[in-house]
Image 1 (cartoon, rainbow, N blue to C red):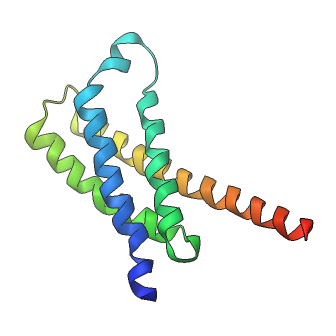
Image 2 (tube, rainbow, N blue to C red):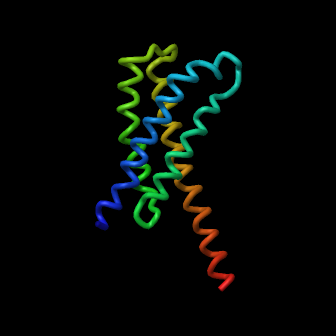
Image 3 (cartoon, rainbow, N blue to C red):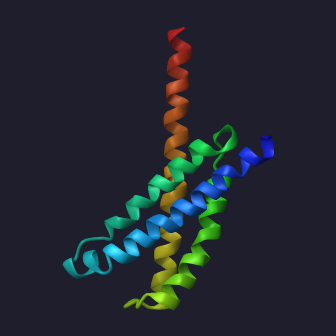
Length: 125
């Protein structure tokens, strides 16, 4: 049971990363680029990282990061096969790498918040 829970974070992150990517690819295609704003849709990738960190054994960072790294090539393949991209291959790669970064940052944020809350509970006892 211990090993199965350890991979739950990677599987959760893999599925949620692809889900967030699909939502952004279908609903927000080029919305931010034409208006001159930065692509704030990348911030949604914090959610899969935080959820995967919650599902991981001992709240580790490696498994959610592994799930995001494994999902990125799958998303790149989908992006190139089924969606028309106005960006070059290198821009799409940079976008996916920054999505992996934001996913890892979401996992780190969850770890930080859970650590602070556990320290607070210990001090109150």
